[in-house]
Each structure stands twice: as C-alpha cells, then as structure tokens.
Image (cartoon, rainbow, N blue to C red):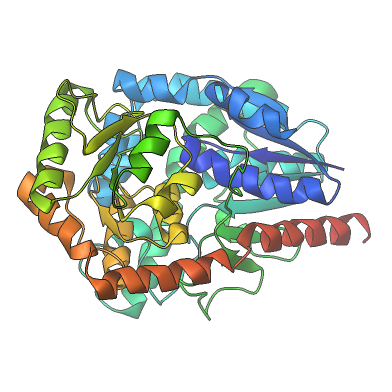
Amino acid sequence: MLITMLTTGTRGDTQPFMALGLELKKRGYRVRIAASESYQNLIEPYGFEFASLRGDVSKIIESGAADDAINADSPLKFFSSLKNEKMMGMMVNIQEDLHKACIGADAIVYHPGAAIGYFAAKEMNIPSILASPFPMTPTKDYPALIFYDRPRFGKIYNKLTHHIFEWGFWKVVSGPLKKYWVQQHGEGPNDFSCPYPKQRTAANPTIISSSPTVFPVSKDWPKHVHCYGNWFMESDHSYQPEEKLAEFLEAGEPPVYVGFGSVGDKKNADETTALVIKALKLAGKRGIINTGGIGMSHAEEMTDDILFIKGVPHEWLFPKMSAVVHHGGAGTTAAGLRAGVPSVIVPYGNDQFAWGRKIHELGIGSKAIPRKELTAEKLSAAISYTQMNEIRSKAKEVGKQIRAEKGAEKAAQVIINTLHAFWNK
C-alpha cells in the first residue's frame, strides 16, 4: 500500500513527516513525500518516493517574499501576512503539485497547510489523516499557539482562540486551493468548508507531533485526536563531524549553540552576529554559531572560543551543548527539549512566542527575548540563567521523558489502524 504525505514549509516542517514515514516503511508500506523541490536530496536517500513542489523554500525566504509571515508578532498580523498576493500564483501551482502527489495513494497524510489532502482523499474515496506539527484541536486548557503569549481570559476564551485559529488558517489556504480546483474541475470541491474539524473521526483522525510532557493531552479533545510525542528522526550514527568541529568540542567545556534557522534579516546579519559574540563573551561561554540560515554571518574576527558551522544535525549536536539559543521554531524547540539542555528563545514571529513562553513555564530555559528587544546584555543574562543547576537538572528530566515517548512509532500505528479499518469495512 502507498501512503502519500503532503508537507509544506521549511526543513523543520518536513523532517517530522520523514520520521513518521520511516516508521511506516519499517512496517512494509510505500511512502511518498511531497515537499519543496529543495529537499529532494534530503528525502530520497531514506528510500522515500519524492514528489516535488515548485519553489525553493530557502530562496523564497531569502527573497523577502515571506518576511511579513515570518515576522508576524500578533494573531492579526499572522493572518493578514499570509494573504500575500506575491505568493498567490506560486501557492496555486503548489496545489497542483500536491494534488498530483496523491495519485495512486491508498491514504493521504497531510499538513494543515496542505488541506487539499482532505479533498483529494474524498475525491479518491480513500482515508485522510490530518498530521499537525503543533496542538491544533480546540481545548479549554490553553489558548491556540498564536494567542499563547497574549493576555489570558479564561477557559471559554482559550477554546475560542482555537476556533479562530482554525478558521483563520483555513481562510488563508482555501483561496489558492479553490482557485486551483475550479481551474481543473470548473467548480470547487463538494462541501468546500474547513476540513480540520472533520478530521476527528475514526475514519479521518488527527495525529499531532507534540509532546504530552510539554502540552498535556486535553480531556476535552475528541477520542480520534492522537498526541503521543514529537516525530523525531533517529540520530544518524554514520554522521562524522568535520575535524575542526570535533576538535572544538574536545577543547573545552560544552559550548552554547546559537542559530536562528531560516528566519532573520540578511541585511542585519553582521550586526546580529556581533551581538551574539559579545553576549557569549559577557557570559564567559564558548559558542557554536550556525550561519546556515540568512540571519547570521561568518564574522571576520575568529577566536578560539567561537566556531562557525553550517548544516550539523541538531539531534547529533544539541546533546553536546550547555544551552541552545534559537528562534523558537517548533522543530528546533523540540530538538532542544529532546536533547535535555536548557534553551534561550529569541522569537521573531508567529508560534515562536508560544514556545518561548512554554520553555520558561516548564522551568527549562530563560524568559524569551523578542528579537526586537534583543541586546548583548539581555542575551548574556539569559545564557547565564540557563546554567543554574535547577534549570539544567529540569531540562535533563524533561529530555529523558520526551526521548521515551516514541511519538512517531505510535502515530504511525494510528495511520495503519485507519487503513485497516477502511479497507476491511
């Protein structure tokens, strides 16, 4: 049987689907992953079928076309930023690519940003599984992630924010989806309404890549919403670091990792890098700076206590750090949690503020420092805070719990159970 997985976004959005796909492959299923064309060399070596989505994510980000979406620091800005006319044509083309990737599948597993998966599955009379990289199902326990770091107004408000998020997210993705469907069929899909609430049944369940240690499973969730843990790629034991990295790690105490992924402003990269170096010096810490994204540069002045890297796997590197400083993307945050080391989150926009607040609530990191408020002095103080014994101890405890969850394995079983129930009915 063939399972098609529809992803959208950056590597941090794509890699959890790969982890889930590997668990399905272990059980004898064929897995096709639809992802940005720039991730072909990442996906194919694992034995997946690859379906290319037009557009190189890194080039789109570097062009500035997605700046408003990346840096949205309020719910209103988040929704308005995604109504991006510059991106509309590309998003319609991507709908076509996602739709083609579903051909021949026996089930479709889709990211919320690839909602065409629900309608394609209905069209093909096969099951669909919503695979969310964050808690998305309405609950009274806490607000939706883009509201999480805002003022709180009680349980009814909490649940309302989730409904607003689902509605807003759907309004964003439905435009290009409907435009493409009309181009192909002359009319929109039958029952063209928000699909997310419909993915809470035995035939069409929801699975969530999130740790119950971080966001406990809510008692008011429907029983066909499943959250067992993050979907992690296992550490690649064949990975061999460059000699300079191995030597740096052996030369002194565990360093602090600093990297802001694919977010940031290329024009201010030199300034940000200088700020980080100053903060590390003030804190008296060695540092590893990741210049693989666009927000950090390779400083001309080299020191024995700073190493610049690109593209080292987080699952290999983070456990060797004394703390990790990052933007608070869901994938990077999860990697830091799993590694059992404290975090300092410097959010730029969207759900990054939520992860920043949650890390501090769990007692495994400093208070978040929004990028607009970042100074060397604030960053230095935050790094020093993470080195307190109680913070380090709590981070180790949480990391141990998360490593034991086996989220991808259990989520894969939900998919298999759904397939068996559908094809044996």
